[in-house]
Every structure is written in C-alpha cells, then in structure tokens.
Length: 112
Image 1 (cartoon, rainbow, N blue to C red):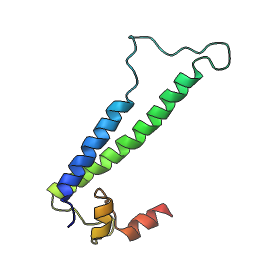
Image 2: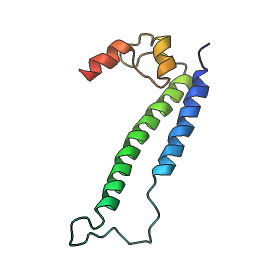
Image 3: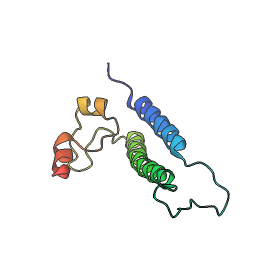
C-alpha cells in the first residue's frame, strides 16, 4: 500500500531540518574568523570542511524547498499533477520521490 504523501513529506522535512542543523558550523566568538597561516596546511582542513558543509547545506536547503512546495501542492489539491504539462505524475514516481513536481517526461526534458 502506498504511503500517505503528507506523512512521507513531513518525515522528509524533519529529516532535512535535522541534517541542516547537524551541518551548522561550530559557534565562534563574534568577529573571530578562521585564520590562514603562512605554511601550507595551516587551517586548510578547517576551511575545506566549512566549504563542504556549506555546499551540502545548499543542496539540503534546495531539497527542503522542493518538499515544502510539494506540501503546498498537497494543501491546494494539486499534488500529483506535473507543474509543466499538467499531466498526472505516476504513482511509482511519487512513491519513490514524494516531492516530485514533474512527470518523468518533463523531468527528463529538463535534464537535456
């Protein structure tokens, strides 16, 4: 039996919010910024970690936007309809990706 979309989307939202919270950089004193030393390697690992965290957080925030949009479509009675062509998004696609806003055809056309 397919999962309730509202439940699946709400669970995904909670999961993304928890992942974003875990990615938050450690608190630093106000005005203190990472310093780079004169030698190779000074604070590079710390800076690289901050960059990776920022990139991951950006991707998670984008996915969260998609989940929130799917929840809005659900509330408006438009869930399961493609945002591009207005056709039905297949049940298997929605089961796999409950926040999908495009049918397979329109999603593939966008990737090209």
